[in-house]
Length: 296
Image (cartoon, rainbow, N blue to C red; front, side, top):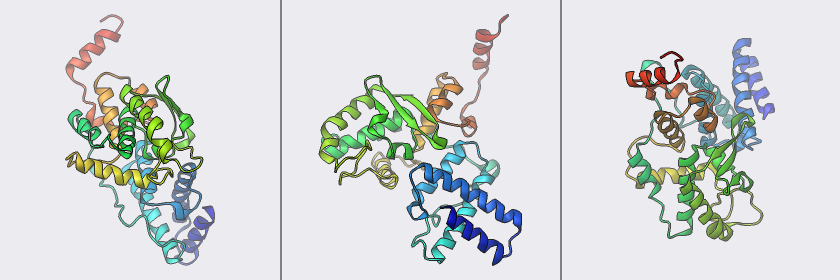
């Protein structure tokens, strides 16, 4: 993937006459993106679709990058993919429908679901059908762990430890973490693995979740299905798979969970974007003061 970056930067420098520092900035942005995609198993730019880009941008946001930095990354990727399309290396520009993020005080915190919306969403799949059982297992796993779409799509069978109710996840930066599983998640995973997956699998597939043709369920497939589930649940909020991450974090923090534990469980670099939800009341201050101050 570095060859295309080098060629693009050369065009910026030699044909467009951009400054050295500007060219270096483009290179840094694109190398960062390429490194992320390669960690997700994408080895060339033809394998990068809209959903892979959204995963990358979400990871940057969760890593604490500012809106200005994310918008610069979007601009760099947009110019780069336009170049690849013009050179006929790609047929479709995955950046066409990805907009810059709003900046300033109008920036909204992430959307989260309330408990009723979560229950409605979990109830959408028709669990009398094989794919309905698979879909319920997916939703329960998202609700239990808050895992990223890429982590879900690439989750191998060996990562599930249902006997001890844990999943072994590998997020961005090759950071590995153990995440607890809820009892409903374990139940539906067992149903899927016992009665559905063996009927779907085509050859030796290590991925947990498979499509109707027995191949690994792609990020694009997960996004498409999720959109249909949200619609069927009658949820009108702008919801995406990562909404489960934000919802889980907010629910746990609001119930008194340690920020450090939530951060480790979800693989966050920091919890900056969830701060608007974490309002401290006078009662919270009093309880914390009395519990932890040695002479309270």
